[in-house]
Structure formats: C-alpha cells, structure tokens
Length: 360
Image (cartoon, rainbow, N blue to C red; front, side, top):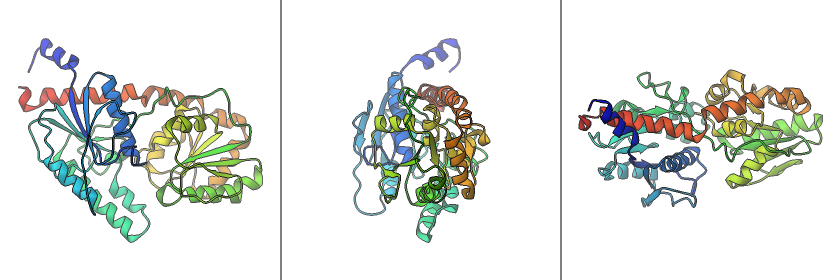
C-alpha cells in the first residue's frame, strides 16, 4: 500500500486490538498486569477498541472489553500458554501479548506484538532457592522462543532485551501523571516509603533492617511506610497492606523519600511513580534502577551496605532532597506519561499493519 492517501487512512482509523495478559490488577499485584491494564485503558481513550483476554477477573476501572479465560489445576502459566495458542483473534487488527506467547502460531493476520516486561534469565540469577531459580530459567527459555519467533517484540527498557541483540524497540512503562504528582502537604516527620514485598527480590526486609539498625538511631523521629502485606511490625514501621491507587499516590506525595532496594528490576514502575510525585528515590543499582534513574542523575543508587547512610543523608539534608525532586518529576511527565506511551504503541501497530503482507 503506497501513497499519501493510504498513509492517511492508517493514521486515522481506530484499531481493533486484542491483548493477552496472565496478570491483571483485579487478582494480582504483579507489575506487568498493571501495565497491560493501564495501556489498554490508554488505548481506549485514544478511540481504539481493545479486548483483554486473561485468567484474571475484570478490573473495576477497566474501560476495555474483557474475556476471562478459565484455568484449572496446576501449571497454570503453561495452561495459559496453550490457551493462547488456540485463541481466535482473526477479527482483530493487532494481537498484543504481555507474555506467554511462545506457543502461538505465526500468522499473517493479525499483527503480533510482544512486550518483554523484564528478563526471566536475569531474574533467575537473583532468585533465592533452587525451585525459584529453576522456574525463572524455564520461563526465560520461553522468552527466548518468543523473541526469536516474533521479531517485533518490544522491551520496556534496554536491559529487558539485552539478551536479544536483534531486538531494537524500547517503549517504556507509563505512569498516570494526573494521579501521581506533587502535593501541597508533606508528612511532618521524616518518612520513607517502600512499595514491594518484604521477602524475595524487592528486599523489604533489607530496607527494614537498615532503617532499624542505622536510620532510627540517627533520625529517631523517622517513620518507614511499607506498602506490602508480608512484613512484620517494628518500632516506627507502619505496614500498610495493599492500597488503592489514590491512597498510594497520597503516600508518595507525603513521603520524604522513596526506597526500593530490589536485587533485580526489568524496569521498576514504583521509581517513575515516585519521580512523578516529586519524591526523591533511593535504589540499589539493579538494572532497571540504573536505567530509569539514568545512572544516578535522577535518584540515589546506593550499594547495599550504604543504604542506611544514604537514606539518612537525604532525610537530614533539605537541599540534597530538593536536588532529586524537579528534574526527575519533569522527566517522568515528559517521557513516561501514558499518552506518550500509548502514542508509541499506536505508531508501532500502524507501522506493522502497513508493512504486513496482507496490507499490500
């Protein structure tokens, strides 16, 4: 298809998009599910028709159509991969998978897009325990199969596709800057916010220990807010459980510092939520943090053994905290806002549709 008229029709007509995600925020806290959900909503806001296929129930704020795929018994991830293989998406312009598409047959129609939200091979290196590491290795091999078969795969960061040198496209995750933004009132006492899990790679336990052993003796009026449901209580530590988006955004605005000391992040959505909120970020130098925080220009990258010290330096130094407020907020609003992310996917879909054999 050639000519300016043909190009114009591609740039204006709404698309019929099928999305598939094993996780959705209705039933899971996994970040890729939140991103699939929010991207689908953003695309609907642009006028597209989106249908989400998932084993999870429909999120209450979903603006898209939803088809729940029932799974039973064990090995549900691999059941899901098999169900994707038989899914009829021929009525759609685009099939967009957020994982587990390694069994899906190659089709001339519709266009097939895969988002790599991280690297299971990388995560396997940082997993604790033989079973967890083995599971990540198996899932990593399925990612390799998908990346080889579907060469229009997209990474949410450069590090998420580093094992696949033939992949070039990076479209980052997004943040709702209308919800995550600075507020007029900050907490009176020094406050650190954590969003993650107490155990495993998010390393909430590491942060709580650094807070108890190093921060509190030097900043005795400090408080640690932990947005998780698996942490024990401790002096000056508040375990908040699971919060709504509105409640979470308020905590970001009120906190003095945000800290997520993960051993591995493919991207790290909480980093950009904190950045958009004008809250300084402290992270350990995992791959996602190094990339999103631009090597430490947009936040503090702290070695594990310096975590408490770096938190104290920010809590007691107003000028230092202010240095990690404006530039990160501007970057989040410019690069990671959902309209910009949705624009990038919209352009990709249309580019692939125009170049598909059936478009000729």
